[in-house]
Length: 331
Ligand SMILES: NC(=O)c1ccc[n+]([C@@H]2O[C@H](COP(=O)([O-])OP(=O)(O)OC[C@H]3O[C@@H](n4cnc5c(N)ncnc54)[C@H](O)[C@@H]3O)[C@@H](O)[C@H]2O)c1
Ligand SMILES: O=P(O)(O)OC[C@H](O)CO
Image (tube, rainbow, N blue to C red; front, side, top):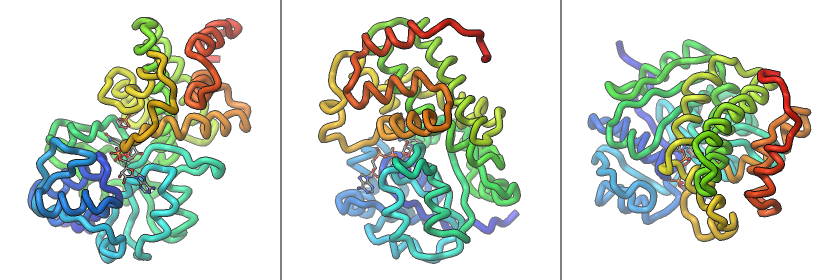
C-alpha cells in the first residue's frame, strides 16, 4: 500500500530527533533534520554522526541536516523533537505548510500549562497534529533494537496512516485517539523517573522504588483522568510502559539526575553546563502547580518539584511522604 507520508523532516537534532531520523533514513529514504547547532549539522552531513547528542550511532548518508528551518518546507510530515521549554519559539520559525506535525517531546510548558499539541494549536490552528510517545531510549532505536510506541491523533485515520508510515520491522507504533493521555504519560513519567533515581541514589531500597512506581502511576492516572485521558492509554506504552523503562535504568537522564540528587548533589550543580535535557526537571514544578490549581493530589510530583528547586532535602521529602495520613488504596 502506498503512503501519503514518504518524505519526513525532523525538527530537533538532540538524541531523540537524531534516532528518529536514523530510523526513517536507515533504508536509504531521504530525511531532512533541523539542528540548532552548526557543529551537529556539519558532522551529520560530512561524517554521518551526531557527536554532541548521539555519538555512538552511525547515521545513514540519506539523512541530511540543516540549521535553517526553511529547509523543512514542502515535506509530507514533520516529527517535532524540541524540548518543551524551547518548543514555542522554534514552532514560530517553521514554514507554514499543511502537513501533519508529530510531537515527540515529553513535557508541559511553564505558565501556559500547555502540552506540545496545545502549543502547536496556537501557532498552526489548521495543521493536523499527532503525538508519538512511549518507552524509547534513543540509542536503542538508532541501533535498530525492538521498540513499541503509541501514536495518537484525534483523527484515527490519521493516527493509523502515520503509524503505518513510521513502522519498521523493529519499530511498532500503536495507533490511538487519546492525544492528551499520550502527552500526560510522557510528561509525568519523567518526573517520577527523577523520584526513582533519588531513591536509588539515596540507597532507600527496591521496596521504596516499587512503591514509588505504583503510587506514582496512581498520580499519573489521577492527573490524566481529570484532564480527559483514557485509563488504557495511561496503563499502556506512553504511560506505565515508559514509567517502567525510565524508573529502572540510569540510561534515563531523568533517573540519572535523581541519582545525583539522592547522593546529595544540588540540582543547580547537576544542571550546570549540561547539554542534554532531563525534561522532568522543567515539568515537575509545572505539573505540581497545575495539579494544585485543579485540586489533584500529586505528593510525589510535588516532592520532586521541591527537590529540583533546592528548597527541600531528600530526608525532608521522604519524611513528608511517609508521614502522610494512611489512606485506602485506590481512593
Ligand atoms: N533521548 C531519548 O531517549 C528520548 C526519547 C523519547 C523522548 N525524548 C524527548 O525528546 C525531547 C528532546 O530530547 P532529546 O533527548 O532529543 O534532547 P537532548 O537532550 O539529546 O538534546 C537537547 C536538545 O535541546 C536543544 N536545545 C537546547 N537549547 C535550545 C534552545 N534554546 N532552543 C531550541 N533547542 C534547544 C538542543 O539543540 C538539543 O536538540 C525531550 O522532550 C525528551 O523528553 C527523548
Ligand atoms: O532519558 P530520559 O529520562 O529523557 O528518557 C528518555 C525517554 O523518554 C525514554 O522513553
